[in-house]
Length: 221
Picture 1 (cartoon, rainbow, N blue to C red):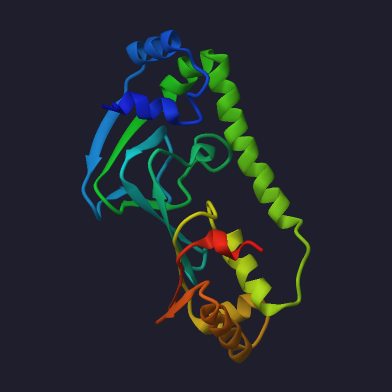
Picture 2 (picture 1 turned 90 degrees about the horizontal axis):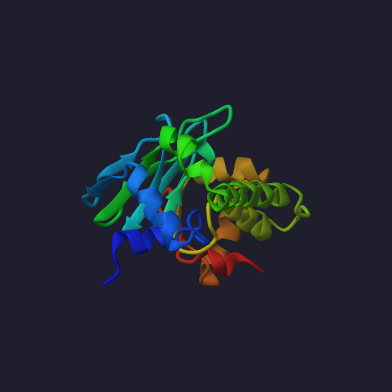
């Protein structure tokens, strides 16, 4: 039977560590295990990121609001998953999104003090951490330099994908048609028509003031 420690070893941060090193880490580092009920808020957007937190079991909803609260993006993420490692350091060390247990969820956290004093002593951990943060930065940078398109349906798809943490899985965009049209620099009528065409293709589902994308991976052409 797979234990929570086996699940931890599946996370990119710990991959490559030998059993002896991982056992040594567990002996020295304080791990805080928490069980969350479905619907419980695990992390609130804007709260300080003072620890590495891992989703070991279950599924969470990642809720991200635009700065003006004009639109909201909701993504589903399954365990195992490392929550916002990029927010632990830098100029802004607050969480960008809220994390809500979609099902019963188990998390474990490691305080930043122990990350600095113990985990960073292991070269493989430092490399894994740098790779995770660097890959994220490179991915976001490459999105900024994608060729622009004049086709409205392609603009909608690009808007969706730009705001996704990962392209896999279900996404929900809560946004008014007028606001989406303004972001796309087009008319409400044209935006509505393009969305309905995408719905007819089975790529999304239109609801009242929200857009459901069953599988964002299918939007990638």
